[in-house]
Amino acid sequence: MLAPRTTRRLTRTAAIAGVLGAAATITGCAPLDALTGGPRVERLDGGIPAAQAAERASYAAGLYAGNGTYTSPNGRENIVVFVTLADGGVVTDVSVTPGANNPTVAFYQGQFAEGIAAEAVGRHVDELNVTRVAGSSLTSGGFREALEQIRAEARL
Image (tube, rainbow, N blue to C red; front, side, top):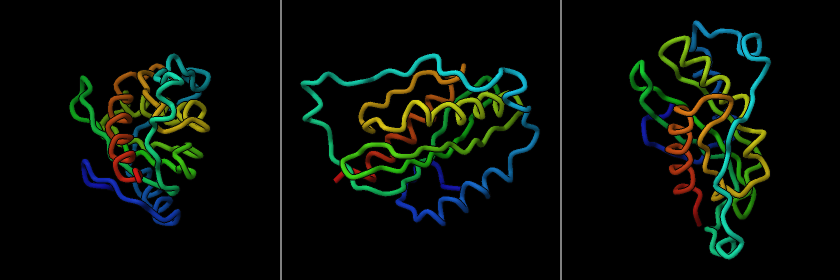
């Protein structure tokens, strides 16, 4: 797993190995779809005005990873975010590896992880300002932190 506040460009093999290693450490997760009927996106905003679109930063294509932390009622929580960018900064793939410390947080992180790709893929990385996905608002803070690391690493 990546150290806090660390970002690096990864090969697809390294990214997959990291995801599998992190996922193997998670225990006690409730069946996500069984409780809620699947992920539901409640709010994703942050589209930028057309006048600012030309001022977007340019990003190098590749697979990037960032580590996000946030505070839940149960303490500090962690997620690892993987984003694949096309030339120019359009998100072509995104995944979140939960790193929860208890089953409740694992549930919300899992819901977030299942719902984020549907909202982020196809959008420019500068347009992403996630506030809540599938009922998980706190996980969004960790996602935004990781995304800032990814933007900094990928920016040309």
